[in-house]
Length: 119
Image (cartoon, rainbow, N blue to C red; front, side):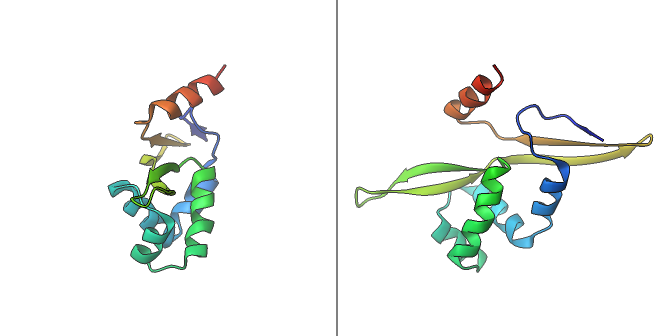
């Protein structure tokens, strides 16, 4: 079994287990459209906020969703979540199972953090 993604140390079983959850998939789809707060995700996905947070914690740990700070009109701020998952592919060929996970990396600060972590 091979993995061709240097950015993450998440294993195949973790990714598959996450994607096996229909609510995780709906969170990924919703956050791929635009950043959304846990409350917005709760309303959109039809889950309690605590269920959303449990799934978001697992997605953030796997680096499939990123947290962003979003200012509000009242002067406070809230956390919004955005999908980092761009593509997930499993290939079975020639007696070998390989997988590839591509993430979006549009945030310069995140790119620098990952790059610094390689040193």
